[in-house]
Image (cartoon, rainbow, N blue to C red; front, top):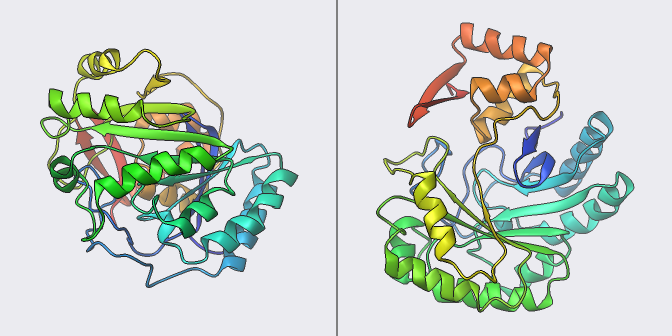
Length: 310
């Protein structure tokens, strides 16, 4: 690839075979500083991107990647931070949408929801086939402690934004809640999250998960038994899905060392992930990167994840 914008493809547990589009490939640019963030770069919260990649460069890289990997389920727009901070998001998605249709793939954006209440952002999000918004807390105290937003962003604005957006969005809306031990797991917070979800007019699916990859801060996951218990406490009318690692072979992916390093920098993987998802060439590249000490091991629980040393 010409830039570091493209990463993967990777097999997503929730969305199928995903080709990642990183809208902030060189530095972290985010309006949150979540305690569970897996990006190793610490950076002050920002309200706009100071470094950007030109729209036409991203579009060109996407076309090149789709020609190389034609059997993609979703083009996943994310960022080394928050993708809705990309200033030309509206122009970008308007140019990418016809390309996605040509290759019979869908467009997906993974957002923390911090800008979901802004009319200009909602206008851009309406052009995606799938939109995933995060909502870890519904009270200001919990929100400020766990997601640590840029000053001026409130949980009330986000909640109102999600409700209003769900009324006008015609695609698939996903809401994701990630539970962190002893922070948003108190019974009162869970009760309020449940109540809020029931106020959202239309949601395709609600994903409940916990910390699974090494976080930058010292926070802990909850057990799957606890996660299951929380899911059971939610209204039976809600489309709840428990997100957890799958131990099954998906398909062979072929990644160069550069592509593998880029993928691991954004999504740390285990040895099992590599052996399950990747072909022999990629597995050899993985082993060589370990020998050259270009990968470092980090553990969460008893699971070892690999990410680049830089």
